[in-house]
Image 1 (cartoon, one colour):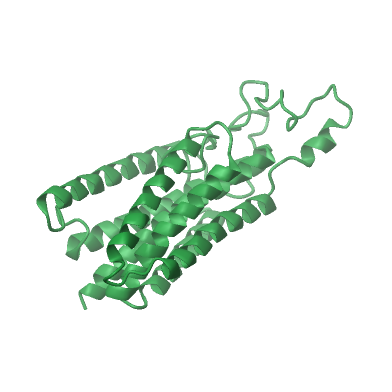
Image 2 (cartoon, one colour):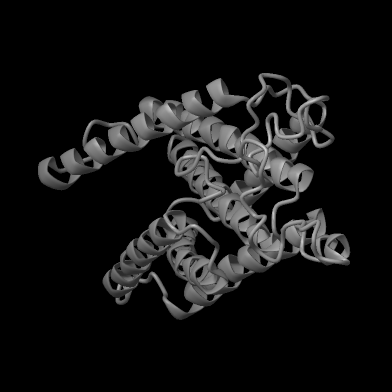
Length: 292
């Protein structure tokens, strides 16, 4: 599993086309069917200390102590998100967005965002999670979010940040409930559609940004007014789809005995997705507040 982020990695999705659920099990009569941690009749982890080894006495007990659990996922996610929140709070107070410091604060925020993007890409292409890399990404992302949130709260709407946070939490809870109730069908076709939609969305936003930089104004107008609201809603829906994919990847890891270290990848993917949803929510609230 290269990354928990559905945009960067497809590993972790079962080969079946059934409904997703936290209690999914491998198909009967085929111990490797749908198992992303098994290839053919052998386990790719069989050569490392996390995998079962029938020739080693007491191997199963050792494996159980190194298999990813839901507690591992929750703990790592809390640490990663906590890092984002703490650095966001520090940057909010240490990088003021008043007229005298606005340029400097924005410059630091943009630099932090670029560093966070590079760190996220580096981790996404690594075969194994690097906790220090993931936490560094979270820290730099937090700096960016803190400055942007402070600016929106100061110049657009005082309650925008709290509304965006509540909206993000509502989306997370809604998708989690829908996933557990098996109302969301997560399979390879779903993953492919979401990945393609996300790439198209990001490219379109990049084109809009280029037009804004070189042509002035709001570019193609995709981030303001009625079109901005429409694309903001699309962004939130894509974020909800990312969450479903993240939940599915976590489920696969739990079901098929992924190594404990991969809980960091789950935390990384969930953090990326929640940051995406928060930014889209913040943009939506800003547009709607500006229209009042």
